[in-house]
Structures are given as C-alpha cells and as structure tokens.
Image 1 (cartoon, helix red, strand yellow):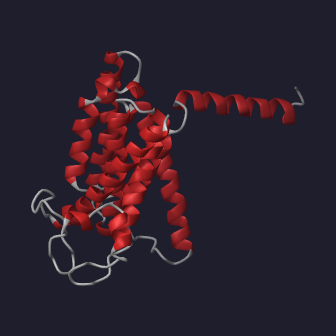
Image 2 (image 1 turned 120 degrees about the vertical axis):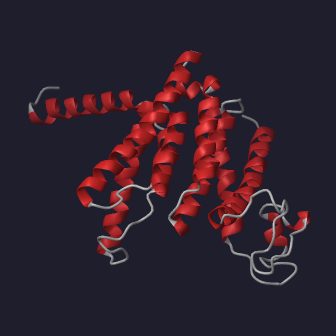
Length: 276
C-alpha cells in the first residue's frame, strides 16, 4: 500500500459519493440519473457549475450555501461523499490495489445508496438491485473472494445469488402465511440476491443472520423507547447492508463456527469438568 494509491482510491470514493447523492435524490423520485447530466439545486432547481460540485471542497468554499439562491445545502451531501470515500478506502485496505477492488467498491457504493433511500422512503430502487445482480455474476470469474479456481468463483456466485434472494423470499412467503401481511419487502430480496453474487452462498447467509440480529436489537430498543410501535414496519435494508459489510471482514463462516465450537469445548473442559 502506498500514499499515492490511497489518494487515488479516496478521490474515486469521493467522486462516487457525489454520484451517490444524485442517485439517492433522483431514484426514489423516479427521475433520470442521466438527464440532466449536471447536478441541480433541489431548492432553486438551477444547474450547479462543475467548480461548485467538487466533492466536500465545494461545500466548504460555498460555506454550505447554494451560489444561486443562497439556501443552505444539507450537510448530508458532503457526509455521503466522505462516507463513500471511507468505504472505498476500507475496501482498499482489505483487498489492496487490485482488480478485485473494483467489484467490492461497487458493492459498498450500491449498499450505501440502498441504505440511504430505504431509510427515507422505505424502498430499495430496482436499478441498484439489478445492477448488483448483473455486476456480481459478470465479475465473478475474477472475484477471488469466492474461491481459487474460476469455476468455483462462478458457481459460488450463482449459488450466492439464489441463497441470498431465495432465503429471504422463503421468509417472505412464510411470513405472509403466518401474519397475513408482507413480512419482507421485495427490495430486500433483490438486494441480497445481488449481494450473494459477490459474497457466495455461505457468507450471504451469514450476512443475513447478522442483519437479523442487528435489526432485532435496534427494533427492541426503539420499541422500549416508544419510538417505534410494535406493529410498525421499519426498513430492513440498512441492516442487510451492514450485515453484508461486516461479513467482508470476518473469516469464512465454517472457520468461525469451528472456532466457536473449539472455544465452547475448552470452556466446558476447564470450568465445568475441570480438565485442562
């Protein structure tokens, strides 16, 4: 790792963060992300010049205000740019400056956009989900995260695609039967099918397990603090994104399960049966 490579990844992350803001604003409102090609102020609707659209720096130079209408620019915009830069850097520290870095930067970018949109609108744009599916499957042949041999990577990607989407689809069907209402959104199913194409079948199932744990903890806290009614739905996409991201930094599920079993055996032997 070098300072020059780190700078390149950070700059790309900031630029993608700027594009993420476009996606987050336009996609849920069914606006084209291509037209108009230039960004515009959500208040006065006037196009933003390129020199006023430099990630983070323009926000600072303009003191957080639009040059045209002088209305305040939401702090969310530079925050998303910085977050994307940090996410890209985390992928760089994990995978190094290699071709494997590309698909996983795309993965965290899409997860970030899906999370932001789901928080505000409780939907996950199909454009993001379908892009993840296609990118994960098409890039699987050089995704060493999925295995050593090319055939292993492709097979694991396909299995991950079906495991990620299929498991949540099963939950949705069972939940519909038991609770007589939708228990899982279609966007959640599709986004995890896409994530599974990047992670493989075992890791995507582990990511879903982590998401369920995180979602349960947060849900209980919100209910206890009266910020969420018992029957009120809350977006699950952010927890799926968090579970997917966390899984990238963990060992393989089989290795972790084996480590837990060894630890439990050691505890039982030393503290219960008195055997060292």
